[in-house]
Image (cartoon, rainbow, N blue to C red; front, side, top):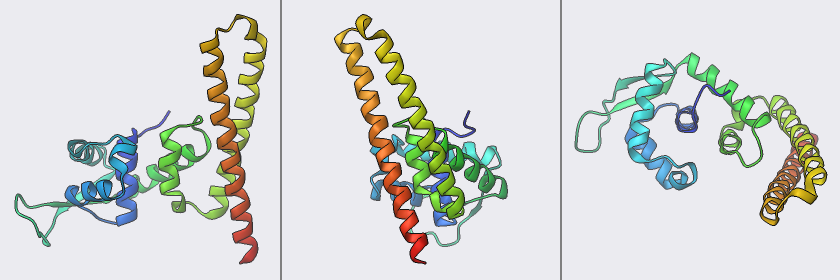
Length: 185
């Protein structure tokens, strides 16, 4: 079970990357990078999430002195040590334990470099093994019930299995790229 929802995870990862940022800057980053539609996070959600993360003690804030826009004085937010620890834990879970086509894995890829290379690689390998076992389980389930499954039900199985196969291929390519990078250095 994740401690953070995806909005909280994304905001923590953006703050880790930026070191410090206002809600306005986070919204601009989300818009500029195209994350709004991809991560399903609205402008208001950013501010609500910042308040929730601050209440949980995962981020802290201070009033900014470098205000360049009109409106109320902005707050700059930054990770607390507890926020950093939770972000690392959630990244480890996101890289190794999430199901196929899970946004948490996608978000974890954004901050994969928060982890040492060897740890990240081990977690990616763990995810690959998990997906292989899930592929086997679903294939056996599909084969065992094939005569009772409707056409639409078969589509669901085939679609899910195709996603898993694609994810395994992506992970294999990532592992091979890392091997080449570490071998060259």
